[in-house]
Length: 286
Image 1: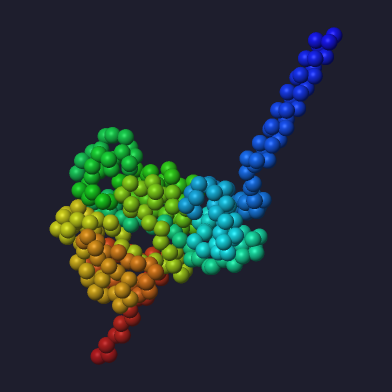
Image 2: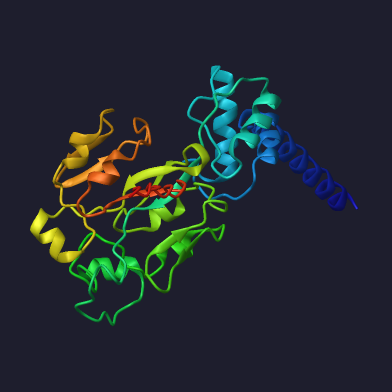
């Protein structure tokens, strides 16, 4: 009987000591989590797309709370939730947040099947990443869209599709959340996030070919040839030509469309503008 009692007392003492040690360790090594992080996380859409630049919505929520403690939410934006979500977050944290303009993914390649002739048949793994790793692809253009749809697979919002007639991805701007997943998926950096623009109107160079003029023209009928006519025409300094390629800075562009008219290769694209009104001709009186 004494042995049993001694065993119970020893086990009880060990359990008590272990409990004290665990309690002390939990206090010493406890990680405090600000309850506001969970509250902000509930307001975020939960897409975990990484478009904000953080590892999921929980990472974004933590960054927002740290920003609030620092007194500024500048640079923090949820591309999926947009301004409405960030407004609710700002109200929760009793912070002010600057208005940010909506962005949209833009496919900077107009090298459709009509404009780029297929010169070889690719028989390998049908992904853009694999085809790009093998070389130029099936056309002479080593910069243009490969058309395998890596961007389509990366989009969680069904906002981008391959047009079967042109072989080029098309973005549904109503569904696009500007998360940037398609941008990261494109091995040739053809897709870019640009300002959506007033009434969805945008002007951009739909080409990323950096070859010199003759080679670019041989590869694609609508390739930018770096002639610089658009740069000279722009009165706002929005266009620069580097490495034989023109680029329009959307922060400076005033949507005048003069550059579009002088481009000899029709590489500059204007989106969502109204169709030009037909010119009325007065009949001459005899």
